[in-house]
Length: 82
Image (cartoon, rainbow, N blue to C red):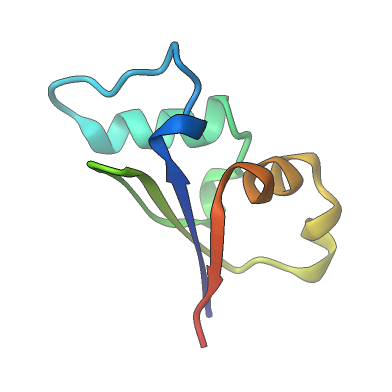
């Protein structure tokens, strides 16, 4: 099962502007360095005109208490796949 997070542009840190190329690397770097999401959990991450979309796989219930998860939940809209 995957968990989807959508981060609107207004919640992306202002110093992190998407480059003209290599958006995938930009999003992965942002996920790792700013949001501190463990890379092994990221199923898909992409930039859209409205912000970033991140799909995580393999989340465990204990992770809900982790700082990175709390921060991600705070800055994003969350949808759990069924």
